[in-house]
Length: 236
Ligand SMILES: [Zn+2]
Image 1 (cartoon, protein in one colour):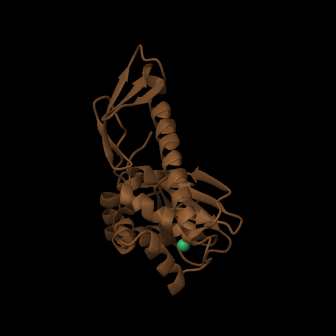
Image 2 (spheres, protein in one colour):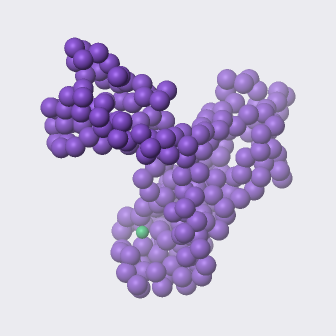
Image 3 (cartoon, protein in one colour):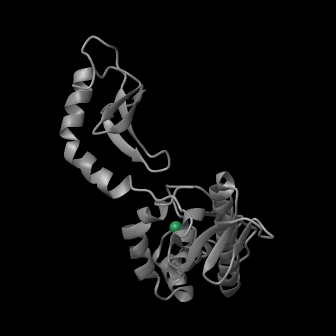
């Protein structure tokens, strides 16, 4: 049992050592358990009329799914001193140190981040975001030139739902988490979004356009669907 029968539904509960946040929703008809990788928590949406025994019964039935999910998704890595992180397909050893001229310096295989420790992670995160934005901008512009289309703006977001998006006015937006993907995979995502400036759909012609600028795109598309979740492994 997760809570006493007499108590009202709590706003959260602990199941298998994980916090589950209960979200009663007017429009929800069934109980639904989801893992939010960004918040690193499980959310259980449920109809307003759901009872405690509904919740308990549901969690018991969801147990094997829950454990599988725990194994595959809850892991996270916080970069630490001497850790190696891959950024745009290049391994970098992380060093935090005093007495460096800039806050973050990317060298051939080393990223030095200025001490003090409490600022280390936000500084590193920001530097990786700057680096990936630069790469995404350059790559998108190269592809745009090939396809004779114009890009207005490239930006990054912390999105979990999609790797990239594109408006008809030429605004491209990417998940900065692509920084942790292999270089060719990032290039594929750029090829995909820029090709939308030619075809705003996923028609055969669209994929032909993608192929014309990224001939090995199928491989990278598969990689992303199989390994995309790994890109959220790092927490800062
Ligand atoms: Zn698309």
